[in-house]
Amino acid sequence: MTTELSFGERDEAGTYDVGLPKRYLSSDGTCAIEPILRPPARLPSRTSPKAAAIAALSVIRRCANDHPSTGGAAINFGGDNNLAILVYAFVPHVQCYGRVGGPGIRESCAGILDRMNASKTPTAFGPLPQGDAVVQLPYTIRADSRCAMTISTPEDQVDHSSWYTFWAAATAINAMCVGAGKAGLWANIGSQEHLFIVLRDESLDDASRPSGVLE
Image 1 (cartoon, rainbow, N blue to C red):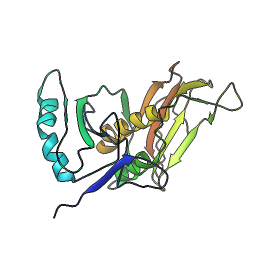
Image 2: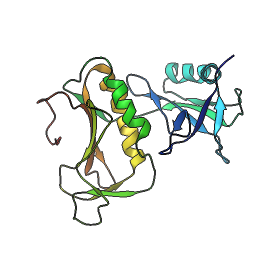
Image 3: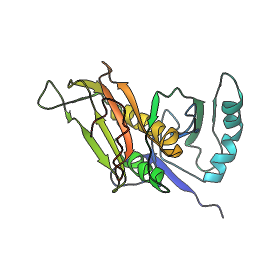
Image 4: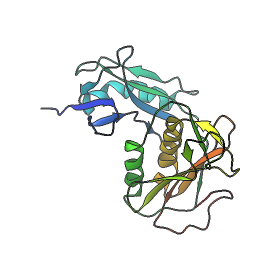
């Protein structure tokens, strides 16, 4: 008997086995695989990982082999058919640097990505009490004593972005940098490009951070 998993929009209660959004990236960050709830209803879904993987295989191959990648979607693969698997080209703007610790650090960072706010609502980030800042910077989220995700600004200004944008950037850093044994950052985030995000191993005192990276 194949075990089914529940998929649904993430919440603080951890209602579903897989809280969405969820994104898997190739090691070079250019091929993305993302389960989504099918519009327009976007109802929670139950399906088996095996069924989803088999259904997505053809579009995964297309994403990996086509140049340029065309991607695609897999639907109607069992369960309640409320889930779709998207495969598409992704353009990362990630800079890797320094190093992170040994086994387990990528999973530590994934613990942040799977539980953090991923709302698409525009939000003001900046040093308080400047302007209309809602989130005070620098802002750090920790999963445990290892991985830390920090949002900050080198320009001491308020800028607007969404938690979803930071989640997407951190997901790319985890796949491309942390997975390769390095820390990483994504800069020029926000409507005025004043924000950046860093994913690093807090258990290491890494002196090789690029200029402007705080903490």
